[in-house]
Amino acid sequence: MFGDLIAAVGGGHLLPYFSVILAMGLFNVLGSLQNIESAEAAGDPYATTPSLLINGFGSIAAALFGSAFPTTIYIGHPGWKALGARAGYSILNGAFVTAICLTGTLAWIAWAIPIDAGMAIVLWIGMMIVAQAFEATPRLHTPAVVVGLLPGIGAWGALMAKNGLRAAGLGGAAGPFSAALVGEFQKSDTWIHGALAIEQGFLFTAMLLSAAVVGVIERRWYRAAAWCACAAVLSGAGLMHSYQWTFGDTALKLTPAWPFVFGYGIMALLLLTARWTTEDL
Image (cartoon, rainbow, N blue to C red; front, side, top):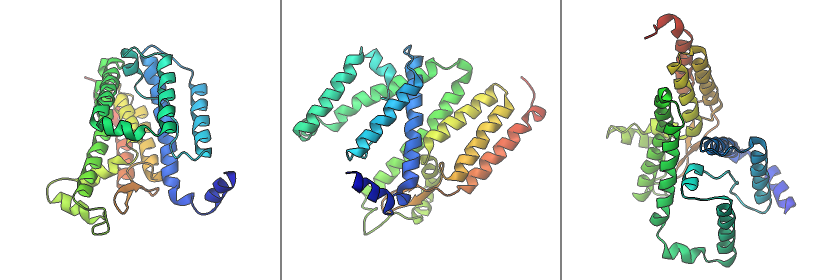
């Protein structure tokens, strides 16, 4: 087992996928931190360090046994709490998943229960999370919550567009995805390049833009400028907005997204001068 792992790391299999590995690792950490914060906002504080350590050890253990999926702190604490779930829910959840994996009954469950029915609980959890974001945030900061939703909505739009292309037969040998699609979308006044760019690292984008908007609302111009500068750095590192065309998809590319680097940089400069160019209302 460990010999195969060492061979995979040293056999030229790491670097080609490193952009995905790094991005997914960062997303996992940030998502876990957000879920811990969500639980605390719902009245259930958990210690951050041990929570992240157990999360990380779980991912490492799973990887050593061949799993390609990292563990993560479960999303939707407010929704599960509203349904009356307690510690026993997690135990039953793990026991059920283990049982269906070891018995091979997952195929029967998927046959008997339409996937659409399962999406209902996901919709419920999403509603609870969004509602909590507005309830737990000071009213003055609600515009920042709205801004934080936009990158995720844009990423969803990009996903739907690509799924539509694949359903129409593209993304295969007869018609692989390419930059020519951008021009085709523009003919119908759909600026898909922006959606594809915002899809990459949208979690970072949402957090940084929301933080910058909070700084603007509170008229803390230097703080808002610092968040924009962080966005410029991440865009320059290729962790935001930089993408490449693959056979049937777009994927994160660790190369600078220069238009966004310049855009965030200009925003930072404007915010640095805002204290002299704006007036208090």
